[in-house]
Image (tube, rainbow, N blue to C red):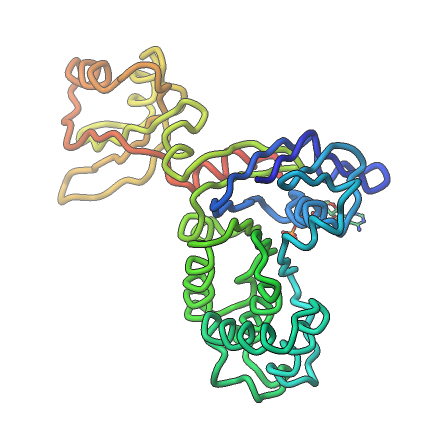
Length: 315
Ligand code: ATP
């Protein structure tokens, strides 16, 4: 549905988005994830036609952004990081105003506002000034605004930024509800957000895509590595390091913590291994040759946090 090719944006000398390629399918909820300054907002602003790319192409359905920007805008609803709200207006009046801009006729306007008030849980605040609403409700009004023309694609820049945990859950529920019918692109720097809401996560760092896939795929394929956790008694970390380093395929040995169990010291160690081989047998074999007592050996997948940190480390 959305096809992005070599999308690049320079602000003077600064390359904020660097040759991004993306294909977004109809019905997908895609999370654009990255640390501050990674280029998320710039990418979304280009996708929504608010910012001209320095180079590259964006095609939405059969339209291209350089020739048919207006047609593309009609297919899109956009909720920027700070929702464009008029604080003196009542929620209802504001939504009616947006409906007028979108050129809905009287009947469409009424039914659309009613539908969005239900969908976004706005019924109780429709006759209050927007300035008096909580941040969570303001965000819901912003969402309703973005959905007014019943767009096929909804683009949201950090939709839960600044909300409290309850409001975050409420907004996520609404997004998931909307996602049953629409294609959604959300930017966020919060991993749990992307994990909870999105089918697919694209991680960007310094303007480049560094990972793209479902949460599960990302966890499994992260740089072709997996983790093995071991717990040892009667061992010292420096000798564990020395012995296990001799196993081909172990790329990192880290001490997680030590635990005192009576007289004994227990080491909890994390081994980063290359995924092409299962090294658990070799690790067990090596431990068997020593005086150490193996209390536990388990394979772990990397958490999304670890993957995100690894991939965006330079930032
Ligand atoms: P955040 O999560 O902090 O909003 P982001 O991932 O959305 O960050 P962008 O806002 O796209 O990142 O910024 C990418 C880079 O481009 C940053 O280094 C930023 O300072 C720079 N930048 C953004 N807008 C402009 C601008 N109008 N002029 C110059 N530089 C800009």
